[in-house]
Length: 219
Image 1 (cartoon, helix red, strand yellow):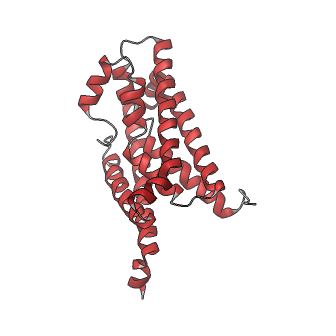
Image 2 (image 1 turned 120 degrees about the vertical axis):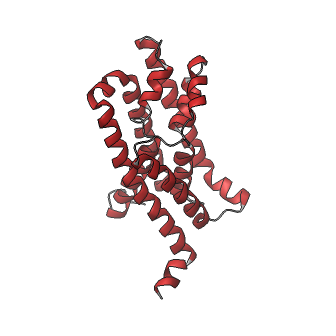
Image 3 (image 1 turned 180 degrees about the vertical axis):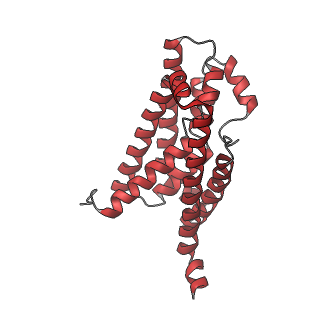
């Protein structure tokens, strides 16, 4: 039986939680959420936040569970997905380092369309604003083609914590934005971008190591 309290398990949980949370990045979603919910009262904003966080949870959990099937169906190897996912995350991390929210989350057109939508909590708030391509590819890479039950539980917990945190942050969007300020949000985004870039590089290194390329270079 797998022990969750070993150093490798704890390290894996920290990597999974930070990766998923930084990619969902609910703090950077605050300005867009406030624009979409500009005319909503407190209860309506709370319902929007609930819909968005539940959509994020369902989408990420579904792709995490279906990841192995997708790998097998398309004949994709884990190293290939690690390298591809790492490249996507690097591009997103570089944008975050410049204080910009990545265009893979949402575009200005999607934000404008979301203002007029009745189900804006699902699209674009839930997907792609929270559960964007980066977060989806990351949970699939973390699961891998043959995940053990402990890895599945670990990623499920990481997604659950991230979705719950997203609800709390979005439902208190006004207070959080006043507390952090525009400068605070951008500083936080840059810090997340730095850590995300490091995680992305590690994904690529792991993919190259699994292919034997890194070993060949050292030799």
